[in-house]
Image 1 (cartoon, rainbow, N blue to C red):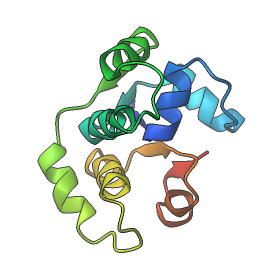
Image 2 (cartoon, rainbow, N blue to C red):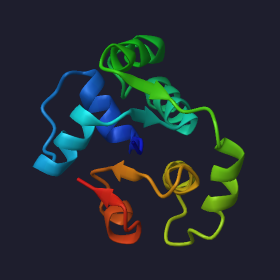
Image 3 (cartoon, helix red, strand yellow):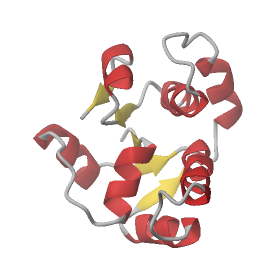
Length: 126
């Protein structure tokens, strides 16, 4: 079964147990597939915490995600870097690496609320 990747925004909302406006398909995949985040999401979480935009510590957020069955996918990260290089539709390195990691993971589905990602990555859903 293919893994489902979460972008940072979706991961933050899930960790905070906040209602997230996702499609029925996205919720179905989250409920019935292995769900992962890229290590780059952990860095973006840290940067959000550093800016005071995350209400809990990064470690606590990651623990809450782990309790929901979300794992950090450490494998294929080097491939993610290579896959993200041609993604010139964004200058955001976090978005590029999140999408690159989904691509490197067998063109996995990426659950995102980011319009650019939804527009440019054919396997992105909201």
